[in-house]
Image 1 (cartoon, rainbow, N blue to C red):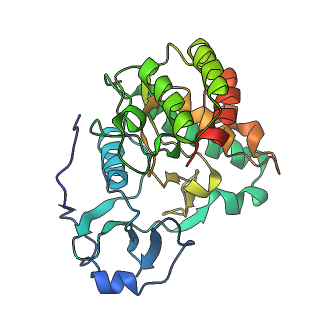
Image 2: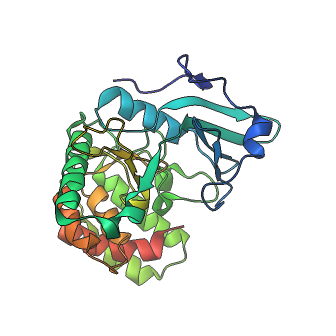
Image 3: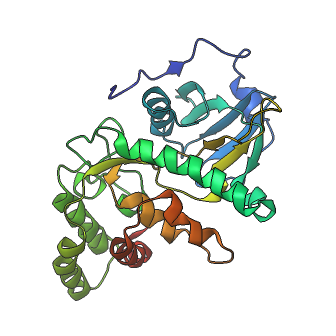
Length: 285
């Protein structure tokens, strides 16, 4: 498997010429701007995520997943940065459909089961990718989840990590970085190895929410099942195998029946989820 892609990256089989930076800047937003990132639609073929807060690793994650699995991920047409503006650009395929969040209230029990069965297959494929000898982003780089963020680079907090023990210690260092009480930190340092141990590195999407699942419109009328497309691979990477389930639980709002279906998609890690949910409130940046 590849460990990196050449950047800038430009696909050769384009549906039409790539949009210019000016066309991208003037295109309509398709989601709210956040953290130095905009997501816009350009014509019928392209969605572009760009800005000073965009990390091109997200595009590499998508290329990696498309190359090594059968998971439905938008095609990546270009990855590049503009040195004049400091903005990075991910030009990708525009998927015609609605998010699972929008369609969920109208789905029947049988339709939910079909969609979640497809999702289970997708996430099982991620679990089956060969495990590397590190916990980190694609290409053995720092982890991009906010738990491991610091204003200035600090490999002891950001990663990559060569063991689960050093990843656990990184979370404690982040606790210090956030100014947490030292006695609480020492207590956590005793407890974490009892919960977070013995987990292999697994390629992880990192944000299983319905807003990141697009139900693609059927291409042919005789298709008997709707295909699901996973988007937003921004924080993906090689995390402990419990991470996917725990982050999915952290994102739950408990305002409908969606939480009752999570175990149909992912193998549960209930103890780890309880601890990480508490830690995330204290560590996330």
